[in-house]
Length: 123
Image (cartoon, rainbow, N blue to C red):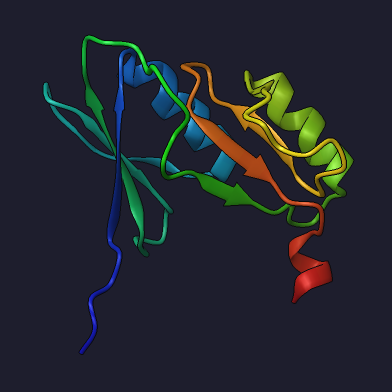
């Protein structure tokens, strides 16, 4: 049997801030937490989950791994507005001016993308 991704780990300065941000973005919840970090995931217990681990140094360069999101049940424009309201910011990582996706960053600067087609348009 092949391997399966069960957890994505993110190093962050403010674990609570970033846990709350991604829980709101993904409609997830905290599923485990201790003094070392927080795990968030879907309420139904499916995978993958995200583990947030505290570090003391700020992110310095572009992420080598990032999330790609698709709007689900709303337009891309509505989802972009919601993400910005939650604390995401637009960032330029060198994407082309005519890119079909929007590059955003979470409150600590970790990049992620909102793709141009919704889940419904792709499915």
